[in-house]
Image (cartoon, rainbow, N blue to C red; front, top):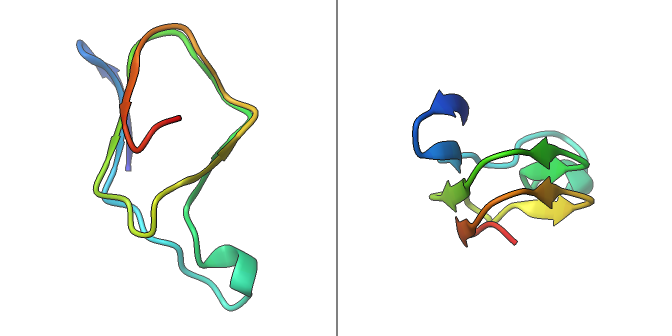
Length: 63
């Protein structure tokens, strides 16, 4: 789940990978621009992340 419009920033939480192919077994958060704090938690396995730009602090599982 990705929540925008949260006064504390953007939150990505409680996601899991699903799919038939091996590369679909990990939740992905890639090539995004986030103009606020980013919080990630409860994603299992942890998020695959690349190419993101975050203009604020990032906490938890977020890189």
